[in-house]
Structure formats: C-alpha cells, structure tokens
Image (tube, helix red, strand yellow):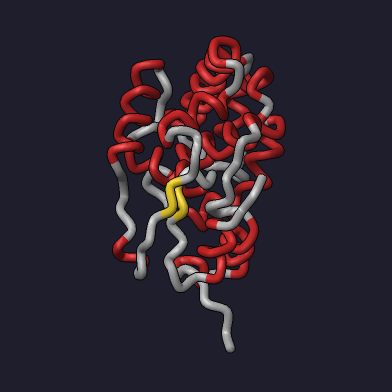
Length: 192
C-alpha cells in the first residue's frame, strides 16, 4: 500500500524529504527557528521549492544563519550577497535578513530565547488541525495575524500573516499535515 503524504509533498524528491523529516515537527532551537524566519521571508512571492533548492546556498552565504554575524553585515557584504546566484538576489529580502538578525538578537536578550518568544503565539503547545484536504488549509489564522502584528511592531521585515503562518507550519507550531498523511499522527504523538 502506498504511503500517503500531503499533496504538496509529492512535487519533487526534495519536497518529499523535507515533508517527511522536517515540516511540522515542533522546533524549539533558536538558531533553526531563525533560519526558518529568514527562509520564509525569502520565499515571499516565490515557491517553497525554489527556497528548498537554494537552502544550502543560503546556509553558506549567510554564515550558517549565525545571527551575530548577519547582524554585522555591511554594505560590502550585502553587495556580495546580491551577486550570489545561490540565493534569492533581492535587495529588500537581503536587507530584511540583516534587520531581522538584529531584532532576533534583541529578543534573545530580552526574552531568554527566540523559541520562548515565538511559541507564545500558540501558548507554548502545537496546535493540531484536522484538515482532510490541502485546499482546506488556511493561509493565515488569528495566531499568525497576532504574530505578524507583534513582529512588525518590533521592526521585523517580510513577516506578514501568510509568511508567519508558513513559519508556524514549518516549525511545528501548527500541525497542518492532512489527516490522511502518514506524518499527521507522528506529529500528534511527537515528544521532544
């Protein structure tokens, strides 16, 4: 019997691997959360497969998502990034990564951790939805609306409610695997 997956995960082997191993797994590692924040912002207006294909390029170009290093990027480094075909060469998105690194570091100092800060939007526990079809999954929710509002207040860039919801899905703050997907029950039963 074939393994059932979320419909979107069947588009390519890379998307399937990401779906089967990462997407929707509750994530509490500050650095990995920061990586997803940057990648989700880079995706704006593009497909997630484009970003997955460039993920290793992002890791190399952005110092393995070391926020301290990214926050210190100057104009010379930004120009090098804009010439790098391994990433999305969009000035607003590259500048946003630098801005977001600085704000991320502020939150790390003030809140004791980025994970603690972002997980507050779901009261510290994953929300398990019960969607039967991919087309039933919303693009945003009241939780992502609130996260986007709070992030924008702090000065984050590329953090609209749709981007925030995609971030929440990717990092397991919400479980949006469809109920027929083999990962749905695994994520419900996931223990840290």
